[in-house]
Image (cartoon, rainbow, N blue to C red):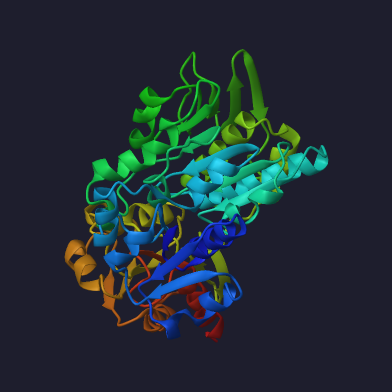
Length: 452
């Protein structure tokens, strides 16, 4: 077995395969000095390391090629493997082949971590209170669940966040599969919107008539996939639920669940602690998913009431001299920044930047002129965003350009006034300055806490 990428997923898969008797070569483009931690994590295991690149001769001894999430299918070694007929897989596919229990898989361009975390909390509360097995939560967030598959039993439940990168190689679908939304994202990886949507759709393509699909009906990219549903379907959204459909919806400002002839009023208006319509959508999605998975309603309601969001997702860092500082570092695409802006009615100082993903900035620029008072640009994408904004006007009073995020925080501290929200919702990835969005969010937190 040849594994490409010695990050979290590659290390977890290596441990699992070695434990089950496979001969593993782990290849990473990094040099030995940069991978000291990764090598220490596998110390004592019979693993062959190939560092500094992915030479094609590694394929000579490979019967299967396993890709970590960050490895594109367009690099030469993957293309050559496909030419030779060497099958591709990843940690999530291997997990799905081995898992003994029911699985829930959640994907989408935005909201999947929040929704997966909330469904996981619902599952834990439901299963603990009714002593009916154990809930495992992971996949593209937290620990890869391949770390735990050997201890799972048929009574358990596995809840996975699944990315488009993982779905590209998958030929199995979860028993409950949710597509929250499909909007432009990762086009630097997938090339076209069609290819990106096709990757997302694979979460449904291998379901059976006994399985359940959950689709966001307010999002055209997700809702068009209803034609691909092989089993039962539920939907979720803020819009009216048409006759003959099951799922969650809002009516007269109240939340509802419909399943056949059964209607349930969900008393969660005051229990939702997350701002924005997109988070109300996430809660409705979680209820639909939890219901499809057979979770108890009382446990789901309790989990909603106790849920205050996942880190780096509209996370309130602090309030200083009447100014709220909010960390939305997860917003690595313009569409996610749009959702972040729409979550606030207060005057906004918006921090935009990072690295561009070849995504359109026009819709965000238009909204900025309507809803944002000050923009502070940082990172590689600053010039691209500044061009898209086209100068001040409308509500937008100023545009400031900085070299990096730390300077952007300092500039924001000088601009913001009592009653403002300073929102880090960059619209670009973190890879120009940080290892990932979490590291960017943690640095933002730290620099904001240093302000006096």
